[in-house]
Image 1 (tube, rainbow, N blue to C red):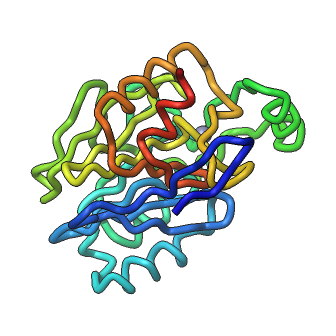
Image 2: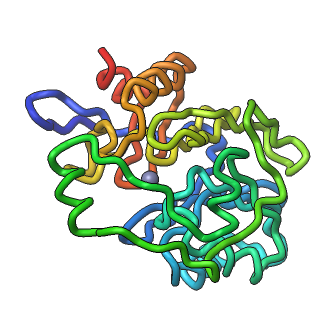
Length: 238
Ligand SMILES: [Zn+2]
């Protein structure tokens, strides 16, 4: 299906054959469930999101204790805010970037560096937040290089895609489904991929987008808005 945004036709992505990803819309952000023999959770939303995520796990026919792994794409509060609660409720181990593991353990949301006018505006609205130790969770698995997910029953890999934060991670599945965290966003408007409004290093963001787009993903899921086609990502760095 074609729609138009800013004069450019936008193709809605179609989940590939054998798609494994279920998007869990939380309002402020998306979390995702990868449906394997045991499910894997990607991101956890703000504090207070655990009930919605546990309900989605149940709807897919799993028990909370079936959860094999919780992946945190990056250490921003709207992605790790319910990680401690969900790790407690499910017993699942947490995987995060090695470089962001200490901040995650302290419950410290990394600084969000505004990369646009909208980013500066949102930054003012959000203000500065102190670490919240009760939200901290110690990642058992810390990655700083490509990491296969076979041991969790998933044909896929985690790859570092720095830029939004230095330790940002992308989950890539053999089905062609890619979960990129906040590498791109699509909140304004929802159906169009955009560069993130916060980025520690925009040059690195573009390099990471180029690497993801080069892999020709069938569908790209992001923390805010989306999903998108691989072509939508390519259009961002042309
Ligand atoms: Zn973020």
